[in-house]
Image 1: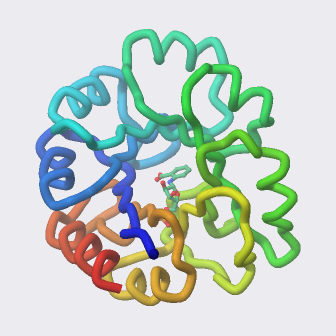
Image 2: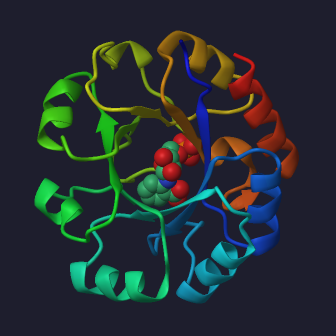
Image 3: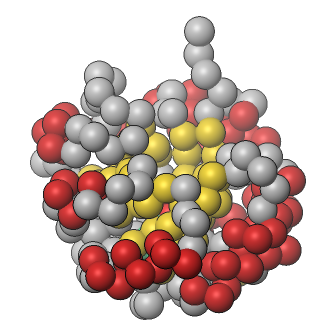
Amino acid sequence: MSHQVRVKICGLRDPATARAAAQMGADAIGLVFYGPSPRNVSVAEAQAVLAALPPFVTSVGLFVNADADWLRDLLKVLPLDLLQFHGDESPEYCRSFGKPWIKAVRVKPDTNLIEYAALFHDARGLLVDAFVEGTPGGTGEAFDWSLIPKDLPLPLILSGGLDPVNVSEAVARIAPWAVDVSSGVESARGVKDLNKVAQFIKAARHA
Ligand SMILES: O=C(O)c1ccccc1N[C@@H]1O[C@H](COP(=O)(O)O)[C@@H](O)[C@H]1O
C-alpha cells in the first residue's frame, strides 16, 4: 500500500504563519538556524513559533555545521522534535545530540546516495537537495531526479526547487516519504506566501 506523502514547510519565522501552515495540513515545519539565510530565526522567534503549533506537527531545526556546544545549549531551551543537518556534519556529530535527526545531501551527478545512506544509517531519513556551489541550501534550484536510486534504504525526503507546479510530478515519479519546500512557497526570499503553501500541500497530496 502506498503512503500519503508527508509535507514539510521550511523556513517559517513567525507564529501566525507557522500555525496557518499547520492548519493547512503541513506535517512538519522547519526553523532555520543559519545566520546567512534570509529565513534565519533567533531563539526567541523559534520559541514563539513552537508555542503556536497545534499538536502532532513535527518541529524541525535546520543547522549548517553548527557549533556542537551552541546546539546543545539551544536544545536545553527549545524542544525541537527533529534535527536537520544541512552541512558537512559527520555521522558521529549528527548522533551526538541524542535526538532524532535527518541528513541532507546536496546531489551532484557523481553523488552515490546508497553510500550516504550506509554512512548515515541511523538517520531517520535522507534529505536530497540540489548542489549549488557556495550555498548550502534553500536556493530554489531543482536537480536531476533520475540521480535518486529506487532502492534507497532510508526514508527519502525530496527537496530542492519544489513548488506548487512541479511537486505533483515529483511525488508521482519519485514516491518520496516526504517533500520539503522553502523558496517555492515564498513571495520574496524569506517571506512565505500562504496561498502557495496551501497550493503546494494540495498538489503534493493529490499527485
Ligand atoms: O532555507 C534555507 O535558507 C536553507 C539554508 C541553508 C540550508 C538549507 C536551507 N533550506 C533547505 O534547503 C532545501 C531546499 O530548499 P528550496 O525549497 O529549494 O528553497 C530544503 O530542504 C530547505 O529546508
